[in-house]
Structure formats: C-alpha cells, structure tokens
Length: 66
Image (cartoon, rainbow, N blue to C red; front, side, top):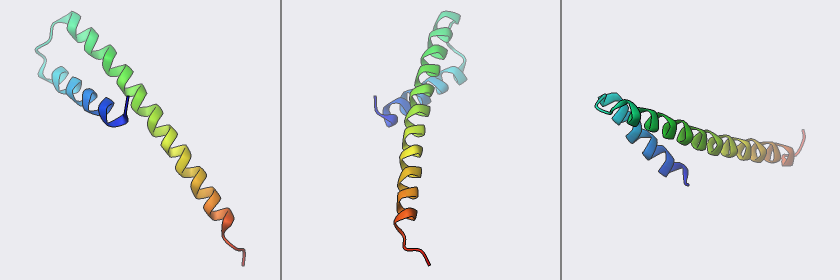
C-alpha cells in the first residue's frame, strides 16, 4: 500500500470516529484499522527518513576538505 493511500484511508477513519455515529463493534474495527494504517505510514516515513539521512551523509562525505 502506498503512503498516500494509507494516509487518505486513515483520514477517513478519523473523520468517521470524530462524527461519533458508529456503533461499538464498528468503532472497534475502525480503531484497529486506524492503528494498522498508522503503522504503515510510520514505517514508510521512517524508511524515507533513513534514506534521506544516508544521502545527506554521503553528500557531505563527498565534499572536499578544506
């Protein structure tokens, strides 16, 4: 699943939870799905952050000294 897809679905779940019109069983399912989507988004962001940090380190190490 792409980050943007997970983020969009998570936003829809948050909106639904904020409306407060779901029953208890549905609330539980929405919450669990929201947790899953949050983990997906967090993992993807962590991966991108790691790549950016790696690129930044390699860029700085390629610069001439002095």
